[in-house]
Length: 158
Image 1 (cartoon, rainbow, N blue to C red):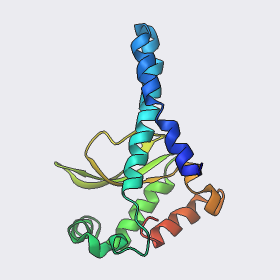
Image 2: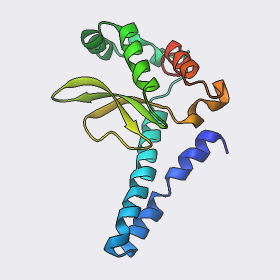
Image 3: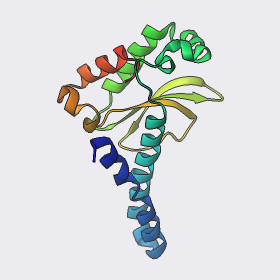
């Protein structure tokens, strides 16, 4: 199995957590809820991540493929380069493991948020996310988060 397949399959254990939740008395359910959040969040986050990927050479990877999104990013951050700087700063601000997200909220519009560990986005609609767990960049750049963020930014997130 590839690292990505192995990691993604690990999150599918959510059905086991649901069974344990239903079988346990109330006092044991808190631990099961934590497992549901972690495994369920991991499954949701990675599913969104995989769905948003396209080869860097694909026309879908170009900002031209999403003119309305680029226009809104430009309105909010002043341009794609400024957005990348702000997004990268958020990614590098994650302590430990987590995700950086571009999120659209009906009230506040676009924003950059981070979630800890595998916590899913709970407010707004995730546009795309970047996995900042060590497994996401370790094999490419070893332990250098900054290199990973710079590399992804240069390749439009890939």
